[in-house]
Length: 559
Image (cartoon, rainbow, N blue to C red; front, top):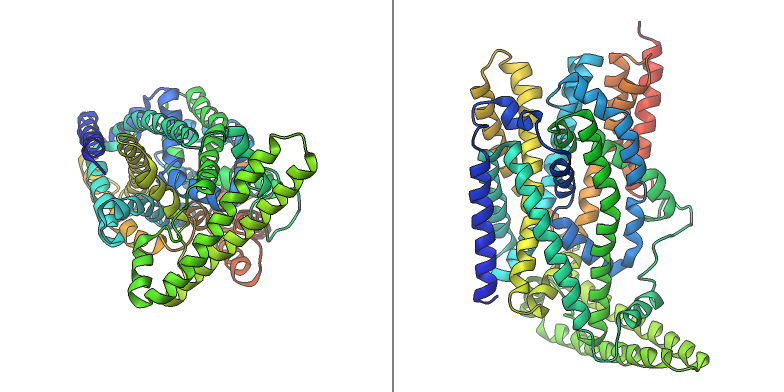
């Protein structure tokens, strides 16, 4: 990075910390002010905060890398989002607002009993604590590339810095900071898209690039096969992901806390609908950027290994083997690049047969290139004794650092920091809220003062921040971060959703049924994970249905 890039990043970080502390005034000694902003925020600010909480640096780093590697298929994951939001607007939003609760799990004590509330809140804390760790890992990838530091150092730098800021901010400061950070993110994405398009070779248009991507299957957005072992199909997107979204936005405190800060039930509903109908276009744009990075690298040689730290380690251990694979990789890229140019040129002629032949040659050369890169990744795994190695999360950061012009590097890194800090601060605040309200206040200090609750909330923020940093150390090598965070959630979300279905939708449900139904649902997800080949999105369906069925049957035995 150069001086202008450093200036942009430093100015952004300084402003966010200053603004967060400034906005926190007035919420220091009020529990409702610190945790719920006195239920006074406008719908549009809440809506942007909902989007910012979900749109972490994982979205920018992991989703673009996912699109580079696998294309647009991941978009199917979001098709059920508008349906889920409409259902939640009719059900849980009015329930929670009228109950005047701080957390979603308080409602369960009113409906069932204390042990059900405590168990669901505990599972939320574990799932969200793991999720924040993955969220911290994404910007840590960026810093490790920029500074040349180890990932452990960068994880604690970003994690503890944001933890410190969140301890003083409160939800009001978090929300208004989210609004400003979303502006930075949209500006950064728009600028990035423009730079990529203007970096294509002369004579290669956006249409040409999309045809190249389409020829290799990168533009597939609907997969109709019904296969529970396939991650992204129209069925997993419309059905399995529906269960995940219902649970995440309706039962997860990190999202429930957002719409509980709204001024009214109607404004809470509007904030969710705003997120529902903006999220898919925004996700489409981010995936498209990843696909266009793939197109860019048809004509410019990409790194054989995007994680330079792992590459350097392999070179130090077996330089000769690495160079031999690199020679084959370079030749494979030359073949693919030449075939891509011929395909683009052939499309501009009236000779359909020549265009089809050029397309077939391009597809074949792309497969050869993919085989060369796969060989390189297998070499890294074996040489570095790292079977978990996967560099998909390094694709977009490496592109930014190596290919973006002066100023745009700083802006994009600021955008990634904005996405990271908005999510981390929101998630940590929700973890602190559940820890304080569902455990400290309910079990240990029911007669405490607001000052004591705010003080404990800050302490809980620090503890969860450290826990998340430890999780982040292990998260970067688990694959695409956008998938990892949803996998973590899918182990818990379905079963938690099942408890709320019992609470809101089944009058015959009793406390004993809800409590043991949740445990049985969690066990069923564990069985599905370890003894079947179904993909993680379907864990949400399994957990929910088993929890509801078991909870209802157990309730029939209880008066």
